[in-house]
Length: 160
Image (cartoon, rainbow, N blue to C red; front, side, top):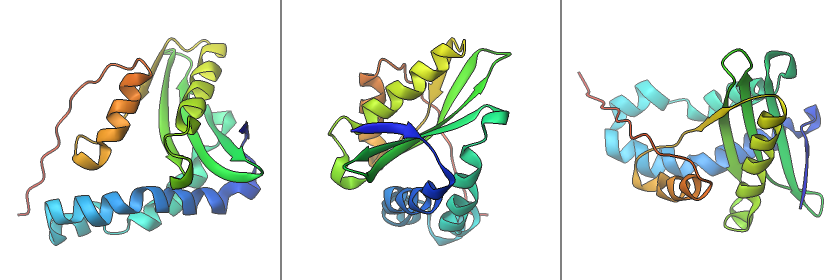
């Protein structure tokens, strides 16, 4: 596996990987859980949201970075993180691993890469978040295996 810096040529693949990775959450988990009205209001354009969000993940001038994992020249996953030097705080904003590379160490290598970069820049605390639902249970277990401490947070939706 090779971990390298993001280049603009990676963008379309990253957007598609993000949509493929999180599509099952939105369509098979979130939508049935909250119903059509809440789904439409909160994440009805989730594909478009990612098409807007992913390009903004990499902006080194603003303390935002992306690293790519490749196997044999093919995209296996990526991590996007940002830093706040004044607060010495970092945040893993996005982690997406292609289904063929999950549970292979790709996600761990990407997170460790981001954490190492944060440490080099003087960051003392890093955050990484995920959902509390069944879909995100593997992510919660993975983050705990990285030595992260879970802070349970609940979000409640109500159709009015």
